[in-house]
Image 1 (cartoon, rainbow, N blue to C red):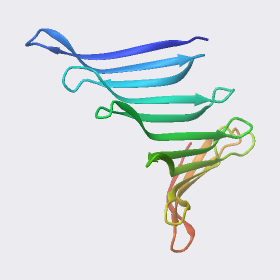
Image 2 (image 1 turned 90 degrees about the vertical axis):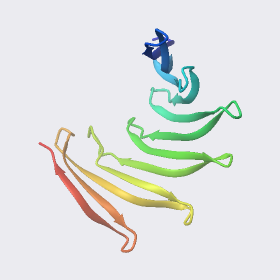
Image 3 (image 1 turned 90 degrees about the horizontal axis):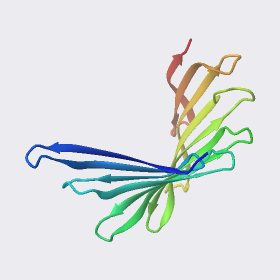
Length: 180
């Protein structure tokens, strides 16, 4: 187990000045072998400047519980929140809900979420549902649902995708895939 940092630097060769010129730099920081931050710098004019950074949080078993994205505002010389993804898990450690929020007007606002349903012993989920937040209704609106057929060993043998029809309040078949 370790705490470390990795640094990736991409450079272009400038044949006029006969020098390497930075294009992009990515710095990853790890604590206890888990990625806790990722910083991306770009060099639009040959000088590296901050662009975006991500922060990661984990539960006690190492499952990612939150990923926050920030953007550098060069006018105010500050990092600004853009979005975050929050993930919750079942008692068995399977993903239960992934919630995506956007930062606007000083607060986090729901945008979309995906929910997973698991059958005991299966290696893959049996159902996933995608939803978006409706500011008008102040509630989640279903978009699509995937139902997964599983083999006795818990692997997928087929996927049926349906879309939500808000006019009839029913799921409508869209696509079906077989897996052997």
